[in-house]
Amino acid sequence: MICSFETLYPQDTELQRERYQALLEGFEKHFGSNEGGEFFSAPGRTEVGGNHTDHNHGRVLAAAVNLDIAAYARKTDNNKAILKSSEYTKIDVVDLSELERKEEEDGVSAALLRGICARCRELGYTVGGFEAFTKSRVLKGSGLSSSAAFEVLVVTIISQLYNDGNIDPVTAAQIAQYAENVYFGKPSGLLDQMASSVGGFTFIDFKDPAKPVIQKVDFDITEAGYALCVVDTGGSHADLTGEYAAIPQEMKQVAAFFGKEVLRDVEKDQFYRRLGEVRKATSDRAVLRAMHFFDEDPLAEEERNALQQGDMESFQKMILASGASSFQRLQNVFASVSPLQQGLTLALALSQRVLEGKGAWRVHGGGFAGTIQAFVPLDLLEDYRRELESVFGEGACHVLSIRQAGGTKVLL
Image (tube, rainbow, N blue to C red):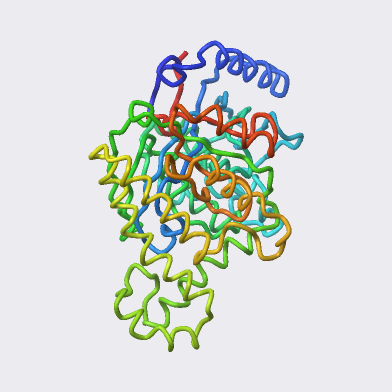
């Protein structure tokens, strides 16, 4: 995809011009000159429906948002992929002649860079040397998927610099997920990468992850009289990989009881008929998480239908039901290893206090720490922002807009 600068940033054009100028200056500082490069961008994403269903081949409703990671990059002939982020002191350097997985890189950005290059080459795409300097607006640990945005950005750079932009959005997302699963060591589903790569409001059915069914949803939340807010509670996702990994593992334990790999292939009625046996064979928490899946999976499709029909009242009821299920059965609102840290629980309780009967709220993304999501009537937006920021700090409440472009080359 190729997108003009003005189309990509219609609301804060001048501020983004300053940011892109800083990209040029940062690139020149670290790589000697800024000649011969191009601009790229990939968005963060917000999960609207389908909380923790993608990894068990479920259905999701997601949207790309206006907070993005941008890069200035150019080809080199030194057979190395070199990336410097303005947010970190370390420079990632990957020798393209050594693309095998390295255990010592587990959990660090170099693993993602190496994994993406390796997978692109395995799939027959051309991979050559490049230098890149990045600046991100995607809040790290916010549930807006900064890692997926980073991954999609790197795939977009390789696609545009060496493959004439021919890596399609679905393949780009699958490459990104491969790098995160195999090289980085995080067993995530495909939702984050797909939403970032495709752009817009997107309904995705992962029944066959190799060929996900994707449908764009035409809906303007502002015209409907609402703001989409993400509240950053200040919690960190650091050291929570085990908490995230346990969710798909436990769901798949239940699926394995029925001789299946994932819950999407298990009949809901059969699960409930044998609930006592399943509980004994797995655990209470695994059973509860499976219960969440069986309700959350079809709910994402119903949420899509409500948006298509402009039925915000039904949509909000579904969001609240989804949030309640995540809290009670999925149990990803706070980490069991840190029970005293419950910023998400507090933010949800405050949201209920301000919005009950007039809006909707739920845990956002992977959960355990980071952010909640709220659909706030425009006439309550300032009250809601003031209430939440009085607890979590100025700037904690982010009012987002939906971005139609996924990973893209940017033309100034």
